[in-house]
Image (cartoon, rainbow, N blue to C red; front, side):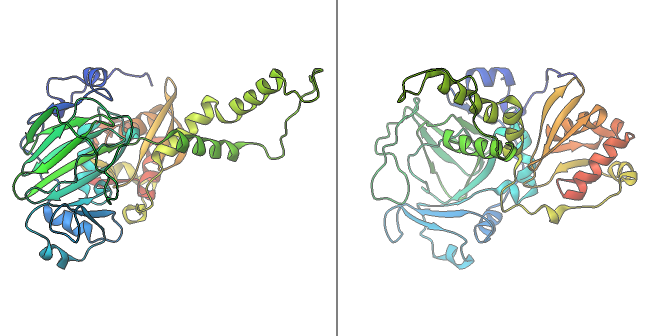
Length: 394
């Protein structure tokens, strides 16, 4: 399976190519994309945002700048529906995390941003605010696409990243002590603002019914990466294996010689930094689903012999909400395929099928139809459907 140079284009980028976006903007500078998705798709309603904020499975927050018990009051969900009738008329915002794991339309919405690979994506947060609702001037430690879904929001940003934290003390929210915007834009439905990490920004709702979709990306700290990689390496290390030095050379009694340091470094590199261990860890780490994901709800046991017929009756093969797929090419026609933290080796048509499913949230059945006669493809699809990783849609 040769690696093909993609010729895909993404409507949200307009005339900008994937290569140009990654080269000029990704993790480098902001980009305003006016009318990038027009007409804006019906992916979520204010009622759904409110409903999710009352769901105990969902992480949600309410920020009231003015009119609460104190300035910049922060409340954490789940909330009771009656709370919304008691909110002030202005200066409040409800934020709901992980929306793509609970609403199928939001899950499919991620395909609009697949010019950045899925393994880098984290989740979608949705905020709903009435007039002048905002969360203050702040920075995020990750890349984000701020998509205006309804109403209007004025965004103010600084054109340089802030590298050191300097927040207003004694507040429940992390507000920048200094904020001097260099750009101001009012975003309307279909407008998108991309921000790299650590660029200061402040968004204020202009009028009622302001809804913003934030597509965020993973940014683990070096400490998190090291802890996770070392844990993965320890799980693969042979028990009882110890340090040896049959080539020990004479040295002073109190000295640790350079040879010992080099040998220890080699042990660490071979145990935790080999490409095979890193590849295995990265595939599992980036596809491990969140704890609020229950794929048993989407599981559909279909025998391999019947998969081809069942798939052909559908229009789309869809990655289930919260399910994560990725692959690493291991040969011309083979891949290591990672499904929700589990790895398997595939080759031939099964590898091609796996790559197609991992490259999209929503895959038209027509794109995999030519592969359905292969028994290994049938087995793969049967396993994915049976685990709830994918579903069939009309």
